[in-house]
Amino acid sequence: MALDKYHEAIGRSQVTADDALVASEVKRIIDRDLKECSTPEVWKMLFNCIDLTTLRATDSPRSVADFTEKVNLFETEHPELPSVAAICVYPNFAPIVRAVLEVSEVDIACVSGGFPSSQTFPEVKVAETALAVDGGADEIDIVMNVGSFLDGDYEGVADEIQELKDAARNARLKVILETGALGTAENIRNASVLAMYSGADFIKTSTGKEFPGASLEAAWVMLKCIREYYEQTGRMVGFKPAGGIRTTDEAVAYYCLVREILGEKWLTNEYFRIGASSLANNLLSSIIGTETRFF
Image (cartoon, rainbow, N blue to C red):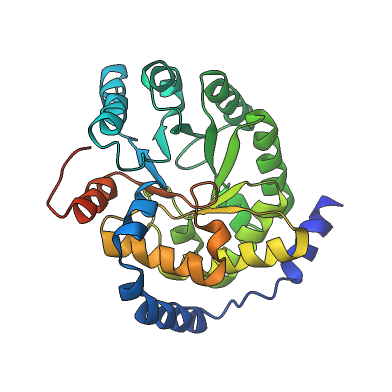
């Protein structure tokens, strides 16, 4: 029954799988809108959509606490500017961020579920997700089982997403598609539909670890799928590009696509996030007008 449901949803999608057409549409939108959207107000909005991320092998309780303190200090030193949307860390650091974070508007996001490969036992993924939420996570970023998806096991992929959605309880669930591994517009479309019909609150491009990160072409397909899903169900699903987004212009390009395809309702950090680290300083430099290295 579940298998039929997902194949049916994918089969009725009208989002194009023509890679050349996708590239052409992206170029049209960016060429037309990038300059117009490159304004201080847009930069501030994008800064407020950042999931400020540290996912290093060298992370430690002290380094994560210091990382969090920078977010506290930013609010004190720049009360005229919005904060980032969330701090994103490995799940074992959720209690550290929860203890140190003083800015109520900033959420705690944790990667989970065998990040970044999704290659571990399902029981481990569920336990890790539950422990992250118990430790204070407001949001959970998991990776879709890409290998199973490419093997055509849509039912297995969907069941796992639903199980992790249950384990996340009230935390927002972001499902990473790993678009660089999926490769084609058709695969990205099918994975987007599958993740949303499995309960994803957000769909996210990439881990930024093993495969090529976010691309505007992958974003276009995902955004079209979000629009189609909303028209079919009335449920708004968020969008998060991540992996390799560093410059102000790169971030603005994603803003242009969201504005064009989804509209103003999605231009808030409730439904639009950017996973980044160096981007925060680059956006801040654009806003202030001088090179800044705060984070």
